[in-house]
Amino acid sequence: MSKLPAKALRRAVFLALLLFFLSASASFSKEGWATGFLVGTLPVVVTNYHVAGWAKRIRITFRDGREAKGKVLRLDKHNDLALIGFDKPAERPAAGHARFKVAPSDGVKPGQDVYLMGYPDPGKLGKRLSITKGIIASTVGISEDNRHFRVTVQANPGNSGGPLLDAKGRVVGVISHGLNPMATLPEWGGGYVPEGTNFAIKSSLLASMLADFAEEEAAGEANPPDLTGDQIFSAYRDAVVLIYVSDKPEKLEKAEKYEDQDQESQDAGFGGRHNATRVVMDKGEAVGWAKKARDNVAKGKWAEAIRAASVAITLDPMLSGPYADRCFAYYKRTLYDDAVADCDKAVELDSINDLAYSYRALAYCEKGFADQALLDAEQAIALSPKNMSYYNNRGVVLERRGATDRAKADYEDACRGGVEIACKNFTRLAGFSPAEIPKMVENLLAESILCFNNGQMDKVIDITSKAIKLDPKSDIAYANRGGAYANKGSLVQAIDDCNTAIRINPDCGLAFNNKGFANERLGETAEALLNYEISCGLGLDLGCRNKSRLTGTHAGKE
Image (cartoon, rainbow, N blue to C red; front, side, top):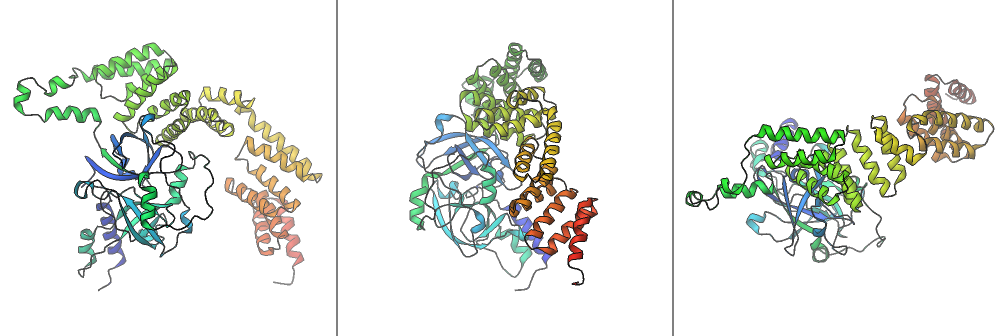
């Protein structure tokens, strides 16, 4: 078989990947089927971005036939991951329902046995859960992409979003895509058709996505035993779900069913669209009322906002914005159930309505649904990371959950971004305003220097830790604490702190000097000299003196 030039191979593979996502739809532009699974203790389903990222309607089906309406909670387009939540709390799986644990992907080796569970091509093969076995062929994907495993497990359209499991039944990846044999044939030549070449997203990326939401679980076995394929299937079959997605909201799909009726029934007045849905007489009028609702929300006129949004919704029930605005107005009037219902509708109509996610997070928080509130707050920020009011709203949720340090950080960021209520929230929680922080940190650093000069290293560590808590981006605080750790002989902590200072500010000469001192105490003379030299080059006189001292000590040995 002749060897194909690398450029042509890359082009062929790229084409193949575009054509062969493992989802049961030709283009996934209308509707399709895929797989998802439950993990940890959270009421979320994991699947692929290419499955849920465009969906206006999501239906989750459990193995026993129960169905639930799904909604997008969080998307990661770059890594092709998505989290789907349950539209109604009552439809969530019970606490004892089967769920997977996520294992670190960095321990996975080539040749290791893996299993894939999912629903391959439900339209042709039926809606029956399957399991296939294969191995890790490579720990990198196409073009050395270290986000993916290349695996030999058999996967078909419909398997997208399915869990890739190790022999202990733990998730080590999420199946995503494969090489399309017919797409590669013309480019690869020689009659060669690649088979069984599929790719899974590594579990480390999923773990990062779940990290903010995961709650502490009861400890399991440190090293659980290996299981056979049938044991894995029996233990975890209820943790895998079938996902149906459509690019049309449920209400629109119902309306279109009337359009499909035969002409006789329409003529008789037994169903046509003119009888099934209200015809919008003037879309411009609906948009005008929607604008009034938004203006009244901005002015804090909640009753007027509710009235205007209701008129807009009556005129055009397919507008997402008025539902979101009325949701917030209901929230401000403490009508939390109504608020959640309206934000649900806003998200159903527009799955990337960031306002709806942020407002619903506040309503969920008041209703006591802390996990769901945090998921929605995170989703709003993911969709619109520059909207600083969303950080304030996430701070409200975090404060309710007892995560006061994280709440203060969000309030501070939002305050610095111009959100006045966030400044008040920070001051209420911290006892001082964000504007006071720079001066407070300055005073603490000055005190730490006095203690350092007096040899009081424990005090230096205590004082600089307070400064870091106030300002996690203070390179000098980390550098000073690193120097104190180095003097105490805590050399690993010293180097860690100095490295953090350098990441914050690559021009921090003090951090390089103190790192050099820690290197010197570890006997790493070459590394110490290098860091002293960098410190000196950045203009720190102490670094220059240490460089000369160390060079003089080893004079004649070069």
